[in-house]
Image (tube, rainbow over all chains, first blue to last red; front, side, top):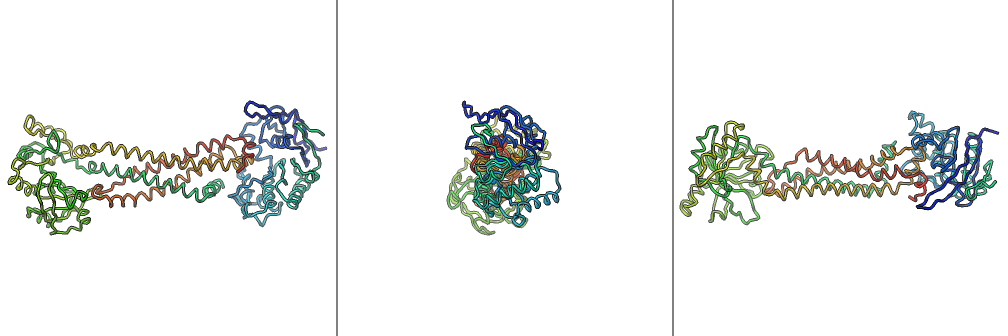
Length: 225
Length: 384
């Protein structure tokens, strides 16, 4: 068994809405080994997206610790956390979240603007990433000129272009038709198998979850298996 | 790439960007026009020669001074030359056709005012013709007056029908010198008064005193005024600049109002741009959250938003400044009698450009603060 690359220990997350306190995760612990393809499932409000956000470092736990590749991310400052995210995490969103004014190439290039790579190196990285997702011939297209499946593939290229430690995906097939969803899942499977990427994916779709090595279910903020 | 993103964001909503830029341009142009009107208002005093003094009645310039004072003034140490003028008033066609009309000492008034450039033959013709007059180039152009034409005025201060023959047309030595006045012989006016109203004869409106050294203006002024202390017509002598400014100060309330309006316009520019930037930031909160997710910091977002705001302000400001030139020139032509020479000062354009930049930065403050402080998870929930 590989060493866990993600270690979640006794994490509690409570959201505050006005005077109300809404507990979302309760003393949750989880290890994700390196190279794992993990699917998180559960009903709406079960806390799966919150857990994903915590692992990705875009939200902070109320208590507990989260370690990714040996870094306790809960203790990092905002600026350190931003830098850490740019180096270690690739994000895939349900609604792609590409910038509409940028081409596919420019969207994929965005994370590289925060690196010290030369222009030529950036170009190589972007072309490689777009090649991996099969969109080398669409790099000058704007998002509105692409299908939903193609947009999501651009988003995946953007997620892998920095060669991150983990890829987190929040309902990556939730907005796609069946055929496109299959293509995206196949691509993610390829990233995991061929490129040894650790993937944590939130999904409602049992077919999508079947592609994962492991499926965990959350309910009311707790892992139930 | 950040610069490219800023440029692409500016023109994401082309119509909105265009209207905002046009709004800023019109506001900057209006600011420039108002400031130019104010500058022009003051330009008369700015054109004043430092070696010229004006001696007038101490009570008010509307009261005359005896012609006999001239010889005494000429003898004051430091005085180089003395001439005199008299406001005539009168009506040409009707009261809407206004231009300045002065009865002057035809022999030497133009020696004291070298900025009025008159061809020597025309000046000689004027001096030799008691009914003659000299008019400014712009006045001649406006009414198509030519040498030899007759100008008929209806007197108001000095009742009667008055006819003058155009003997000369002067040009200003620089653009700010007005070219819309009319000068004729004081002797012609005085002859009429001797016959018809002797009590008003042999008086002048004010004296123009040329001095040897501008640094002696205060002493010479005091010496002249001391000559007429306790007389029936005590005098007040001041530099030509101070004399001109006393006219400007009469309209200080209007000038102040124009200045206030010019700054209100700056406020309007701010509101126009701030509104655009707030709408823009609200629509893009989700994108800002995505950028933050990718590792962009609050500083990056501030740069993107401030860059966009500043770019719009600078583009609009530049267009406004460019448009100010033709607008001011057009305005000057349309109101040539009131604004003989529009004075566009560099400071006006520096202020307009400076305000555009400051407003570009200020308009970005609120949206940038909002984008920088929003939590990623909240931003990602926003529907764009």
